[in-house]
Picture (cartoon, one colour):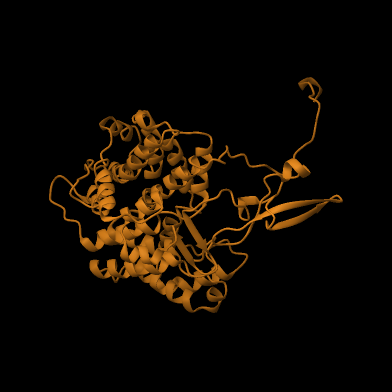
Length: 431
């Protein structure tokens, strides 16, 4: 142990153990308990891993008390205002903002990987038309490993690079195809002359029967949604990707696992749940009733889209998303929509009501993103798939970082066992 190494002391059954204290570049110090089991024959207990650092990472930092989100050190509001999604992808993947030449090369590679193998179209037709698009995406992304055999070797840096390009490029195509399949319309192939966000909107909303022009303001709002959701530290789906990757699973299987985890209403499905709640409330005059229910500890009703597991202050992404929501709604002339009116009034109450302010239950990113996506014409079933394609670059960046970490080992959480102890088997006739 280094001479100036900070330590913490643990006393257990009369024996003292010195635990190294690791200091990060930002955030709280971390107790290193890697040798605790071997030395003291004890585990630590942390349901949900809310106080446990599962890895070392240089990608994303969140300060929940300050309401701060940094990608590789850059504040999310600056990136949302001044950058664009593919530049953010480069930043997350490689650690630095690209030069102009690097950016052009990266955009060229992504743009020319957007098509999927033609045989993959058959996978979609195996699903029922009323399948949730997330079910389709989990299956199709997992099946990519059956088609792209030249990018499955996780020990080959070049194959990891190719797999990364393919996933970032093809997820919008797969998500758009899942949407088109669910509404019975023909698939629309990607176009190399469109930007990442424009391409996705075109694949979702154009039809062969007539020309479709992507509105620049909508493409900008879509690009912001992608950027704001690109990564979010060690959340449930990212941890799932890392855990799957720790076993040596191929990248397509790992990302499919992340998509499956994201599907949960407490994670990626939160914006869908929020919009469904707004529709349940239905009209502004019913808001007081639901506010009263939200304040009642004995009522199971919860206001979705308010507060955050990590942020104990305003969600930094929400401010940017609110600006986009106002721009999109003004552009589309949507002002008398009942759901929107309920959302606006709820937002006003949450920012002024002492109950919400004292508990710091501010509108979060899910509250505004659902409003934007509905205004664009997406059904609620597409909200989580859009989240998934946005988060793909974050999952890949975290997966690559884990693979390249020399201390990486297969994940193996422990447990606090409370079941039966040793019992002898009893023959069925004697039970």
